[in-house]
Length: 197
Image (cartoon, rainbow, N blue to C red; front, side):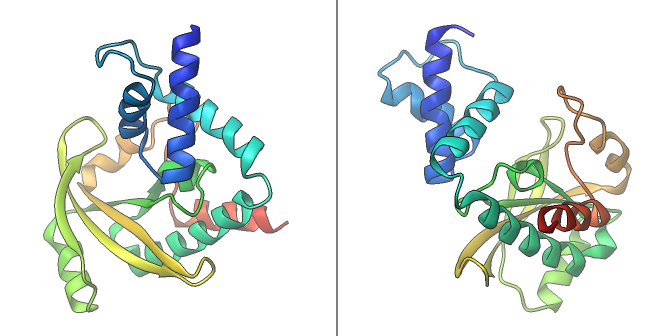
C-alpha cells in the first residue's frame, strides 16, 4: 500500500475508534483532514480494518476487550428478543474490533418486512425507521434504537437491518479474508464464552 493510503488509513482508523464513525465516513473525513483532493485513491475496507486493529492495540488495549464483551452481551440480548427473525450479528462487534463508541448491527431475515416493526411496537420500543445500503448494495429497511448498555452505563445504537428470508444463504458466504461476515445466536454465545475463558 502506498504511503498516502497508509496515512488515510491511520487517520480513518482513529476516527473509527475514537468517534465511532463507519469506514466510509471515516475515509471521507480523513481525506478532508489531510487536505487531499476528494477524488484521491482511497484504501479499501480491509486496509482500514487492519489500521483499526493496530490503533486499538496501541491506544485501547487495556479497555477494548471489556467494551467488546459488553457490546456483544447487549447484542445477544437483542438477538434473543428477536429470535424469530433469524438474527445475525455483523460489523465491528461481530469481527471483534468494536469499542464503546461502536454501534451494533443485527441483520434480521423474515418473510414479512413489517413483522419486526410490529414486534418492536408490541414491546413498546421506540425506533427510527429508515433505509440503508444492504448486503449487495441494494436499499433495505432498517430500524434503529437506542439501547442502554448496563455494563458501559450508556446508550448504544442498535440497528436492525431487515432482509427477506431468502437472503440468508447469501449473507453467510465468507468474506475476502475467508471469515464468516456475521454470526447467529449460537455463534455469538460461542464468542462470549471464548472471551470469558
